[in-house]
Image (cartoon, rainbow, N blue to C red; front, side, top):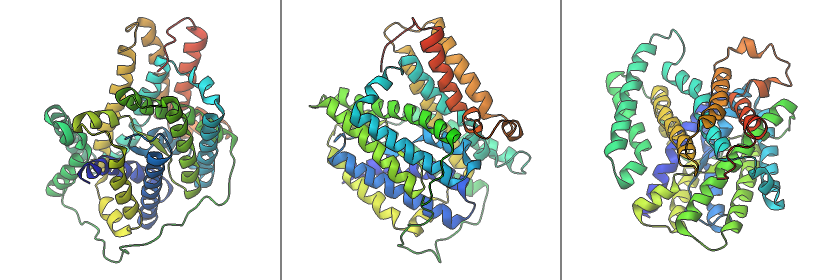
Length: 414
């Protein structure tokens, strides 16, 4: 039970952070945002439960995908029906490619350098989101104070990362959120919204994707996102396989990715961001010395309970935007660290060519992520979801450089 609480403490803050960002994109209504978090917690609970018993059957925590968050942010002008139709299609393609063996061919495209680009592009293309959360909006009276507060919280988080050990380090995100919220209330007093008038227990079956809306540009954008998500999922499952050396490793990968695809289909119908297996699990297993998959069941049960409790979700969602943005920036730093590790730990070491293959996609992706909306609106509607998505453009550039211009380069698979 205690280890289950630890897994819950790792998963829930990420669900709150990603859920708040995605929920606010679709609606400014606090009630709708609560329902979004309810549905997201339900999907993560169900996906975790099914992965433990019928998927990869490994002690591997699950959470909302930051790759899909990029797609949602860049396609938000097309409306929720279009976005979540694309997530349904992407989930179906992921499950199909895993079940038929097509994923094995797709995997060959993602060499170590392309995988590094995936991880780095997630961080760089989500920088505007973190910036907007911290600053609220350019010229806002609280922007300067928020920036100073964010620097302080981020510095404190890195100091804690340096000195904390074991379970305390594994749950650092939740302590940063709690400490940051308390500090924010101390230095910038505000009236907190209470849970009065909000039901303690309630359902969440609203805003479902009942009418499918197919937009070719949005679909193409999300297909590329799902290609990257599949590699992320593979790397997470494979990292635990390498740590534990269980039997039927390949079957675990196939079943795990197949179930991730089905969970994304369910997410699309519910109108929320889809899940992916997180790669931080080996560190948690090593720190606790426990590799039992059944320790994830209490975490899944708690997430399921929360999904039916709007009042609890409301309290959890009262974290100030500047705190969410600061902690989110720390999460993006972890993405950068993971991406650099893939490059520097390759068998051939770091080469100048590696820097070129990483540099152009990252710079292109970051440039597009910060482009003004009026520039993007000048492009035809069918191409806008692709050209306006810095992550997608960066991945396409990385694949072109790796497999066309520098075809004789490193071919190491993850």
